[in-house]
Amino acid sequence: MRVLLQHPHAPGEISGVVTYCERLAAALRRQGVEVMVFSTHGVSGRALWRAVEQVDVVHVNSHHLWLVLFARLRGKRVVLKYHYPYWDSVLQGPFVARGFGGRCAEELRFLVRLTSGQGAGGIKHVVVRFARVVMRVALAFAVHRRLACSEFIARSCELPLDVAVDYYPMDLLSEVAPCPRVEPARPRFVFAGRLERRKGGEVLLRAIAHLRKSAADFELVIIGDGPERERLEQIVESENLRDMVIFHGKLERAAVLAAMAQATAVVVPSRDNDALPFVVIEAAALSRCVVGSSSGGIPELLGPDGLLFAPDDHEGLAGHLRTLLQRLSETEARGRALHRRVSTLCDPAVAARRALEFYTAS
Image (cartoon, rainbow, N blue to C red):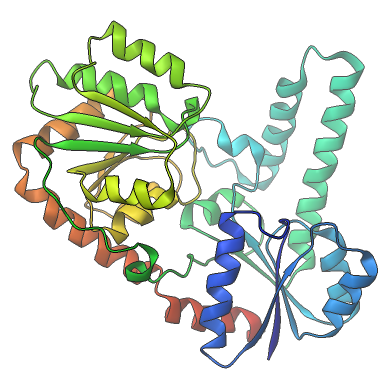
């Protein structure tokens, strides 16, 4: 069998979708499958046509109309993978199921709100974006199988079609360089991510301020940069948290992993519906305990025993952090349990067998 694994990114560009393609390709090759990882960035129609001609299965990882059309015209089997929320409106606040018709209407209302007050330019923008929605729906019906990177993404598609769950293939032991565990001088919580509103940095700092009232012997390390950094630093000043909050800024991945390896717990306070936050998988690779919001794909990674709180609920987050401080011995066990769970969900051999089923099932 010959498989074309498409991604839309330029050569050398760092992307989770590119990483997914490379890992899946490696897992499939170990099963004896011939795989071509193919970037459609700036590729001509002629090159697309020729690439499709060489394979039996086309695995698309973006809404690429021409690639799907060419594959169908050549009689190839087409699989489409969703790596992000299918509808833009799903990113806004807690997910509420609306059904296919209701979701289409909600998407249109969302686009109108997004561009209100922009005059004729806003109307044009709504038309263009809604046309893209129509194209996405048409592609969903045009392919043979639809996949999603998490149960949340599959559920939130709300299409009148089957969407199968296909977790990322990851060998957790090889995902991280050896990071020796050194016990910090005092319990340490770590946040790693872009400093923007949707990542929940403010929620975390409000939780730390609330927690300080009953527990002072801990610290918070914030890794990352972004438009919210100045505001977050102002909160640290106003809440008098300078002695327990450390901003490290943006670090290389090896340094991020080394810092996470020293964490009592990694905190993921996302406000929006992250499909499958990679920071949770990295923490699992390091066998670190994770406290996360109940948004997007976080709950399914953490499992039924995960420490979850409602997005924006800083008191709920503070409660979980207080519990961990009172029961520090539990954090190691929780980290090991998370490692086992995510290793099972993302096992590369299982991912390869699952992909072959998607490629061959009628």
